[in-house]
Length: 155
Image 1 (cartoon, rainbow, N blue to C red):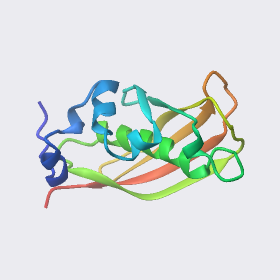
Image 2: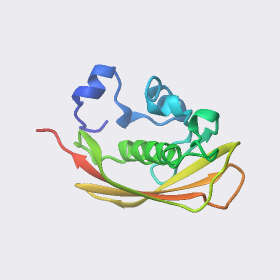
Image 3: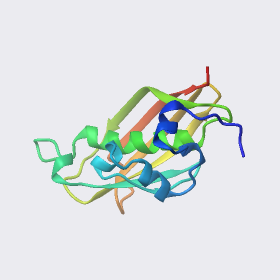
């Protein structure tokens, strides 16, 4: 058992996602929040490779008929955020995103997109994560996402 302290928000939810080890726990955690609204499904929980998928539906499309860039970012940011949670240093309370960037190199209009988040840097004050998003079953990326997370410590 680690010496991690609870945070106010997670305590109000009655959960501590820093202890989650299964996709089902994260899928339940995202219920009634943006991940569920976007249709994000976590498929792999691992500190070195966090994976998920998101079915493409009309509500995720831009008016031009293509997958909205913000929808892709919703998937990638969810995966990297959850990966940060399970990678928090002992004693850390939480995290917050301080920067994110995405390069979109393709798009889809239907099907399912999948994301794979991997760590670039995991320090005591910041973490940096990459996420590559592809159409499910393809190796051709439609987006490359990177974010920097600030690690929050109890006061």
